[in-house]
Image (cartoon, rainbow, N blue to C red):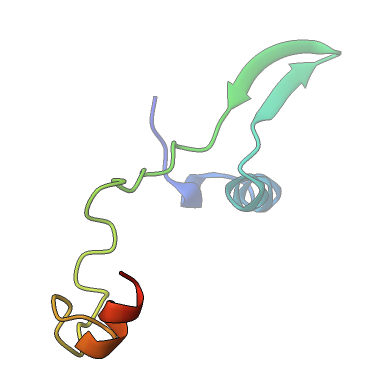
Length: 76
């Protein structure tokens, strides 16, 4: 069954909004007996690879040494 948010009572709309913010389920009971569980929809997971695509700007030559060649001789 699917209904729109407008079809719900104002109190129920508030509970649904709270559920969305807290990411917790709502258990509907009748005299202590659970009847239904309302859960927020799963959050869309971001891909681990490529999530930083186009967020970095290379300002200089990343292949060239960061220090002058004379400093390399000290390391030998």
